[in-house]
Length: 243
Image (cartoon, rainbow, N blue to C red):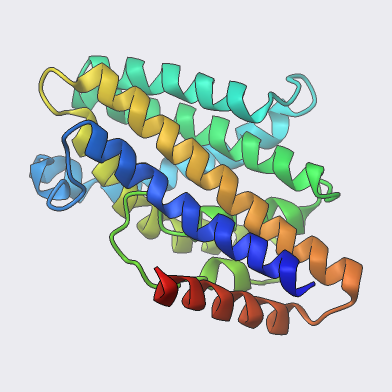
């Protein structure tokens, strides 16, 4: 079990570096990107993100009955396309693209939950899929071990889901703001949007594997999940110190 926890910790650490590598290749930096957004866009970002999450939470679940899951790489390809389209028209099209990309990523997270043996239609599983978005994002400069998304638990009701959406939205808004700002860089718009979406999709897919991998490991071994997450936290911290 210790080796499995370590493997998930390595996956967690590696995932966070993807977005910054993409930005580096594009000659951009996450630092100060939010300042490049117009004040009106920054002020409305939390509400825009919350609306995108509300739309995505329902749309992603409803679509499972009619649209089959796509593979991990095809999902990334889809969001590359939406990111390119969003970046092509600057900030207005980038804002319009948010709910679409968020829905595709959330559907991918639901598919990963199913791969680990969890029913995506189960309310608890749906809530945990949403919690993955609370894991900051690939452009986050916080190199700490913010693993609160792994420990959020609640009795799932309509009111609690809305509370969870409001809890997740500000965290997601912070990294989506960086994404939007990067997509509005002159000349690079479409290419940047495609590359940033690739990094975001890859990141949240990896976070889903970590979250549901730990949940599955806890169930298979009969381990206390809180203790398992603490062991995971220690592994992540150890990897940070050894770099």
